[in-house]
Amino acid sequence: MALYIITCTDHDNVLAQRLAARPDHLARLEKLQTAGQLILAGPMPKNPENVQEGFYGSTLIVDFSSKEALDAWIAEEPYLKAGVYSHVDVKPFLQVFPKG
Image 1 (cartoon, rainbow, N blue to C red):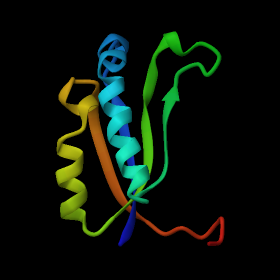
Image 2 (image 1 turned 60 degrees about the vertical axis):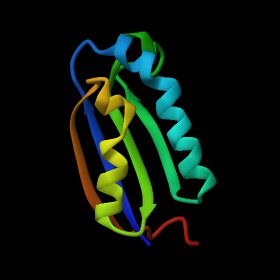
Image 3 (image 1 turned 180 degrees about the vertical axis):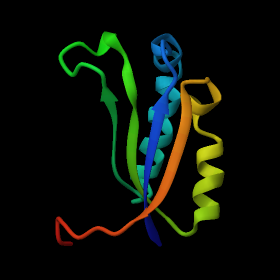
Image 4 (image 1 turned 90 degrees about the vertical axis):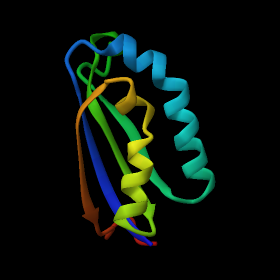
């Protein structure tokens, strides 16, 4: 298994699409967490005190057996399919802290 950091960038003015796709997005993350593959995940709000102002995107750190398996998983991402994300960047990640 290998860790990857995923940085997703939202299009402008897509809060409605994000909210509509959110239940499916969260359900996939729950499955990933249950499988022990989700290290962390969360949105990057433009204003943490008022999320109605929208989001810059999302960040995830995940554990997948291969980049190909991760790419297949990302291809089914509800936010991507709903047009929320303008760009998805994936890079390998080495966890140093917290020590495991």
